[in-house]
Length: 376
Image 1 (tube, rainbow, N blue to C red):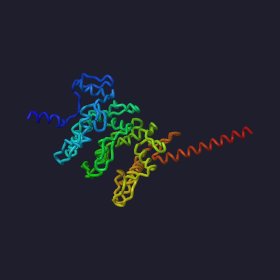
Image 2: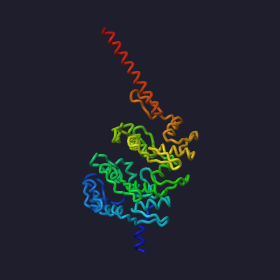
Image 3: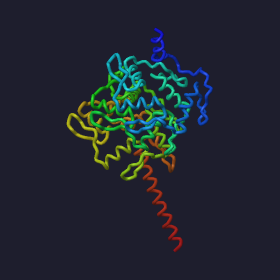
Image 4: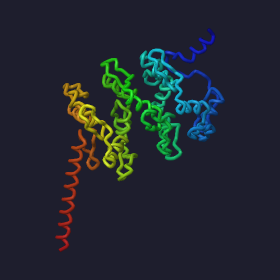
């Protein structure tokens, strides 16, 4: 009984708001983060020092923590010690197992103390809370880019190292991230474990499921500090922020063209490679873009997933849908850098800028002509 009680205290999530009451006397000298135990601080300090004393005998990858190498070794052995009692599905890692169990229960016991958002795990709650503080304690030594979440930091580091430790046993394709291989494996199995309670639509990927849920709730948790515009998706929010900053961090390796968004860069690179990874099972037609593929599939199904709340008009393309929404809202997010005039659509701004440039060229030509005639 005492063992069962002890195990329950570790496995049962506490249905309350996450708050820190414990004293934390051990402080990191680098970033000031406080810890309850000296060992926890020592473990954390390895993030700053870069010390990785544990090497994997299979692939040579080094780790800061003993438990991290034990978890990593399961990739090579295929061991999945955590099994769901409801559906029999097995998991390599405990946090993935817990996350999966909540797809059956729908439970979200942890609340953000800043905005009240409910989350399914304490880990996600802590990561989410950092988005409010703006803290980014994980910095890449190669390029200086900083991250709020350790998993994003590790993923980013692999863009420099090229390390892809996760290999699909069915097709041999390798991945840099565990979540990518899980998502990929579902393309073989056809599994869609995430089901929307509102409309019944099922998803193979948790992030796609969460994004879809926002189409019902209308939630827009990402707000631009520059102009106040809110977004449902972090990717759209980051792309929007780059419009203000002018940053284009994604470069085509073939021609050097730069992009604000990684998807745009990948799509562009397929022009050079000729790759068309999206194949229609109905007619065999292949596409280099997921949006083009989805649009094509709607010709077979007759669906249009983007519905205007104001007039009910259906769209098969998200960009056309967003443009249409602006006809109702009157929103004009595209500003001319020359004169400051606002436009609802990028094409209108482009036409305006070309006209402005053309008129400026004519005016300059006339001024030169007048100056020449005066000199004569």
